[in-house]
Amino acid sequence: MSDVRGWIGQRVPISVDGLAAMSNEPVPYHMKRWWFALGGTPAYLFVVQIVTGVLLAFYYQPAPATAYESVRYITEEAAFGWYLRGLHKWGATLMIAAVVLHQMRVFFTGAYRKPRELNWMIGMTILVCTLLIGFTGYSLVFEQLSYWGATVGANISDTVPVVGPIIKQVLLGGATYNDRTLSRFFILHAAVLPVLLILVLMMHIGLVRLLGVTELKFAGEDAAPVKHFNFFPEHFYTELIIGLTLMILLSVLATLVPVEMGPRANPQITPEVIKPEWFFYVAFRWLKLFSATTAMLTQGLIVFVMFCWPFIDDWLVRRFKYADISVWIGVTGALTIMGLTMWEALVAH
Amino acid sequence: MAHDPHPSLTPDDRATAPVTRRAVLWLTSRLALVGGLVGGYGMFAWVSGRFMLPARAGQLHQLFVARAADLGVSDTVLYRTPEGRTVNITRRGNSGTAADFIALSSTCPHLGCQVKWESQNNRYFCPCHNGTFNPDGVATGGPPGEAGQSLPRYTLAVEKGLLYIYVPGEQLSMGDVAGLVETSGPTGPGHDPCLGCTQAREARTRISPEPRVPGPSSSRRPA
Image 1 (cartoon, helix red, strand yellow):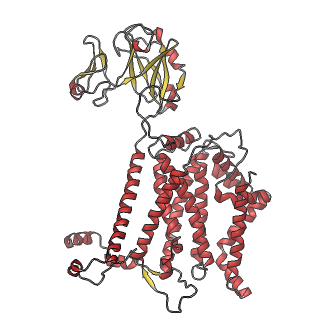
Image 2 (cartoon, each protein chain N blue to C red):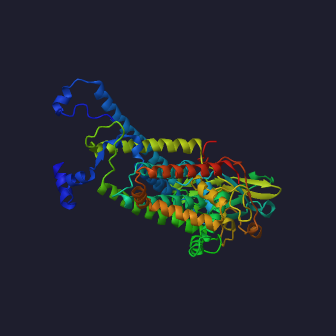
Image 3 (tube, each protein chain N blue to C red):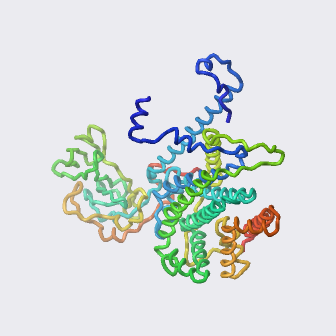
């Protein structure tokens, strides 16, 4: 055995002990609580999305003449295609939910504060990337709702002053939805955005490793220094169990609530009831409350404020001398988002 | 996850240590984790591998070949399926039903070469490895004969005087490829005029809602 190690060591001169020490991040004891494993959850789901997405791409054909039929083939004829498509669809839903929950946990525990401001902004980039991947993926099926969702989405971007028309042209590959549009959505969904997401995820995890996990104490805990446990194997086991649990959950969802085929896209007829995916309900409702330009500018402003929140929070705390002010602002924001989402979900128009 | 119940023991001490409930839990939890990982991800790998194999055709499509009356007894036409496979269709009777016809793949089941009709020997011959088949497509010599690999047979139907063939539904989008093939030499028993070539170009394609003849079943999601 030592001969084999020696042979490999001469050819790959990496210190195993050094690697173990480097990867064995001390993890604060509060991470024993399952709620604090929400960072690993979207990362695991992203891996599921990559694996199932690569498999689906073997059959998917991104052109208006073939897209719908290729998705139907995957769903109805390819062996276990219904299952893999179900995993991909439900994986996307859970991934977006997990990213949002992770972000809420970070927000409400103040884990974005100095020195982790930049990592919060990277996290916001991850959220935006995830939502864009969801939007572009939804459009690929070439069903009625996905076609009109893409059309409405592109036209919404058109209302943004100055850059809007350019974004629309780049997104659609023309003034309107055309033969080139689906391949653009596919490249964005399967190559550009995932690669961008991988890069920002590496930065995100790298900064977590460099800065360490935020150490939290809960009511009733003594004032002694925070205890730590090793990332490997204790936390690694936790992540393995979470991964298996997620696969079981995804499999159950894909089987009991299978993804089905809607009507094929018809550019001549807009459906009576048109809805985006659930994670865009809030933006869709917002668009119904205000004019398109006002809605887009205010949404852009809200996203900008969220990006810069660590610095805004710092200013607010110094201005009002009240450390929990962000909690109340966050509660108000979360309730507003949930309210608008529920509103959109419960009404037809 | 349970922790090592005897972390301070040497391997010899472990062998003689009493079996405690903690030790059983420690072992059980590890076995469950390993079993879950191997079983779960192993199953997923199998599902993924199966998915990569294209589905067998679950739906047979009924395609027009020619007017039955245009083929005389012992006439043969060469027909190309939407998948690009070629089929020799021969008329052998005059009862006005599908039983008058036989449709045999022109692809040798040994290694995929194209067989050709030898009228002087009353057989199909594969030039690649000297495989031979009788007019019914049954292998009679060469590697196909030794392996018992006969020429695949297609199902035919005659409806209102029109001859149809049932072919797998794959790649039907290549519709205009399907049809009769004009040939320069004999393709099967009898002479081989390109009967109904014009009709084939204007072929009406009808898709059967359910397979009407026995065929390989598809892998479908359970209802």
